[in-house]
Amino acid sequence: MLAVYASRFVPIVDASSTSQRKHWHNWQVHLPPSWVHPLLNLMWLIIGISLRLANLTAKPPWTDEFATLVFSLGNTFLSVPLDQAIASDILLQPLQLNPAASIGDVVHNLATQDNHPPLYFVLAYLWMKLFSSDGGLVSLFAARLLPALIGAASIPCFYVLGRVAFRSNLVGHLTAAMMAVSPYGVFLAQEARHYTLAMLWVIGSLICLVIATRHIQNRTPLPIWVALLWIGINALGFATHYFFSLTLCTEAVVLIFLGWLQLQTSSKFSLFFSPPWRRIYAVATGTCVAGLIWVPIFLENRNRDNLTDWIRGSRVGLDWLSPIFQALGTLIAMISLLPVESSQLLVVIPSGVVMLTFFIWAVPILLRGIKIQLQHPENRIMIQAFAGVAISAIALFFIFTYFLGIDLTRGARYNFVYFPAIVVLLGASLAVCWNPPKELMEREQGKNGIKSIGKWGINGKKAVMLIWLMGFFSAVTVICNLGYQKYYRPDLFVQLIQQISPVPVMIATTHKTYVHTGEMMGVAREIKLANSLQKPLFLLAHQDKNPNTSTIALENTLNKLPRPFDLWLVNFHAPVAEAVKTCVMSDTQSMPSIDGYEYKLYHCQ
Image (cartoon, rainbow, N blue to C red):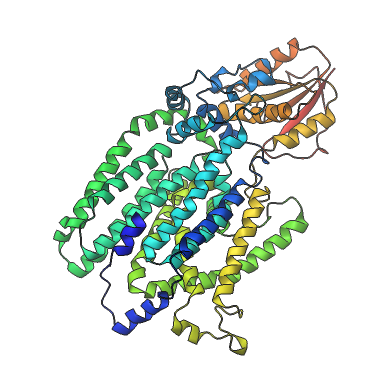
């Protein structure tokens, strides 16, 4: 409906020559039959959903996904006993379907034990009731299928966003095509988390911003239904993820910029009380009311700061530069990500060289496309708006990082707040490459009279295909766990235990939050699904401010266990010398390092 509405909307453009308007009109009039557009959108959707479903359960879940599973079932981590040896089944009990749980339990447990709003978790609660359990445990496939489908559904939404913004089916298709194969988009969609749903609301809010921008240009009132829809989308965004508010902040910056532009031409402050602005003020008011509902819960969640300790930290020396490289790495990986995270140099070096070569070639082409779009009177404001969203969001990330001590650049998933703006800018730039203006084609000639773009003798359509193929291979890199690698590899840790320990095993870790419970759940789940004959015991040694409490819990537990057994200390951050004095430490220097699991081995005879 938004796309149809925008296609009827004829904006008033800046004063320019008739020949220039005709030139830009001729640039976009060569349109295929109308039936081609649904067919192309179906193709992008099929490609996108195929990539998102490939190897969906091949990678083990990590702690954040365990949080989604437990809270979406209406369960709680509090049922797992601490400071005592427990079996795998007891540790995994929160991952079992709970027929007695209700939506009220989901909301209550999140409000009292977590720091996220409940909308996605409620949807996941209803969704997972449609699936049977996986060996007694909730189905990981079902949990990941929901965000994968939502991520795929965003592809046609990206088409609508590109088409509405630039009134061009070409921009819409190229935006959808790049989203279908974006490694970042695939990464978000293959995790049992709420980020694809939050991104869907970002897309919807940006579509409303685009329509509002057109009305501000023409100084016409924003339709009431658009205003109400905008408020509703923003309310759903708040209910999905608190960081959605960062997107709204960037939209506010763009609207302020638009007001400043109008003030340059009018110099009358009365324009801020004109029809389009009055409706926008109403949208802002309604959005603030929707956001204020969550303020008491958010302030209560701040008391659980230990859940976000991982994004806090001091800046020492070169650490001050880390956020810059982290932000740059995430931006690059939205388009291209080859296996540079591989443990083999023979893979890393060629991948790095290919990526570097690709960006040396592609960046000038993409920047040129943006520059040409800025010359188009009707598209200039849209380029400025989306660039404003992206730049404002990145600036906010650095403000949080350097001034508030909250390093948002460490979590690549948080970039969902401006990712749609980057994809639309990419689609708009590629549209120039695919169908460049006539004067540009005449200016740039390749060898033997072949028209090319850039300096490497490749024409525009081939350049778009190469950029899209790079995205496709990058998406394959992600689904094979060679890019955006999982932080935890319990599967490899379980294999190591089975190879090293022929005797009974106890696995112990220090416990502060359910994050550490999730680390051990990953190990217990791998053992259960493998039907291993080894039945290890687990110890979650709770730790508040005094680390010695974990030491005491470990010592008391070891004294009660029959010997012999092997003790694996995993991510155990407390003194252990006194507790393990009757055990012999094994040399683990020759053993492999495993992501997420820093371990030591003791043989207790």
